[in-house]
Image 1 (cartoon, rainbow, N blue to C red):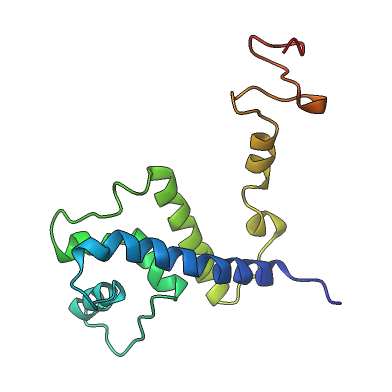
Image 2: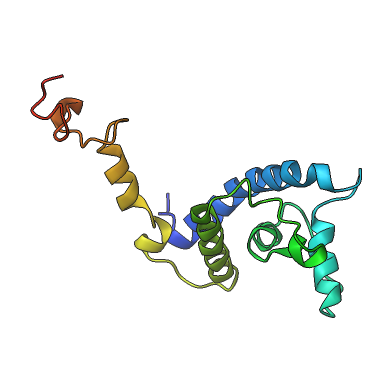
Length: 153
């Protein structure tokens, strides 16, 4: 069995991510769109205003999804329309931008390092080393700082 490349890992991540993003965008946009109108038509409409046409705008396409989240397309169609503002924090918006950059690199056949393929592994490890109260955990899951330091739980 051949080892999987980091580029393939990134591609698999986008395959897993796509249905969840589509569901999120569809749910967030549902109240604002007429029945039977897909959110992807807004991306198409925006491109048409820029003279871009003849493209496919599939709601399952990660590029279209990430454009919807990162380009303020709704606000350009209707001033003040920002349906994702109440749903996404600034951190989420930054992740969407990072994912868009990674998707572009992936689509243009660029290679990915281990750090590219696992960008937040260090953050996950740090989070795993903390209990729900935010205290570092030591061996056996005992707190190592804070008022309960020294394992006196």
